Length: 222
Image (tube, rainbow, N blue to C red; front, side, top):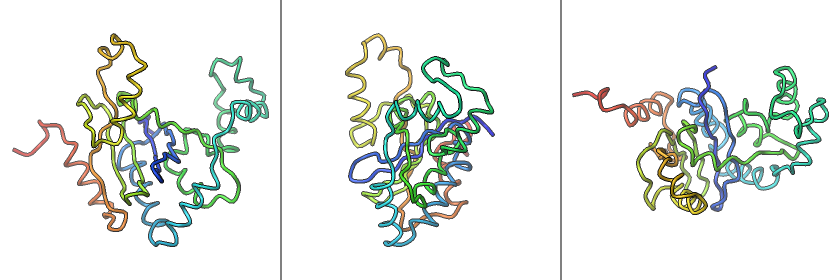
C-alpha cells in the first residue's frame, strides 16, 4: 500500500455529509476507481440514489469525544494520555471493530454507509481539503448536481469563486496570521474534472481523462 492521503466526500443539500480521510492508495487507480465503481453499482437508478440519500441522512452521525474515548477504552487505550501513539495490533483491532472511523477504510466508507442497518459514527474531515500539501487526491459525489468530481492536491494556484472550496478557504484564512498565509505555499485542492453520475465513464476513460489533465508540461506531447 502506498501512503497517498485522500478524501472521499459526499455532498447533499449543500452539506458535506461524508468527508472520509484515507491514508492509502489515494490515486485515481486506487480510491478513485473504488468511488467510480460504487457510483456505477449503487447509484445506477433513481431508487438506489434515493436509498443512498436516505442512508446518509439517517444512518451516520458525528460521535462525541467522550464516545470515542470509550471506544478506545474497550481496547485498553486512554487516548488522553497515549499522545496519539497506539500499537499496531490494537489499532488493527479498533479498525476491525469500528471500520467507519478507520483511516484504512477510505472510499469503502460509501459501501459501508449504503448497506448499514445501524447508526455509523463518522469523522468528518472536510477541513483536510484546504491542505493540498497533504491532501493529494479527493473524490466528491455531488448529489445536488449529480456529478462525480475529481480533485488533486499540491495546488499552488489560487481558487476562484466558482471553485467548491473557495469560500471555505477564505473563511479559514480569516483566522490566520498574515505571516502564516504568506508562508502557506499551497492552496486548497483544485478540481481536475467531473463526470455526470448519469453517464459515468469506463475505468479506462476515467483514468485516461485524469491522466491527460494532470500531466506535467514536460510530459505532454509536443
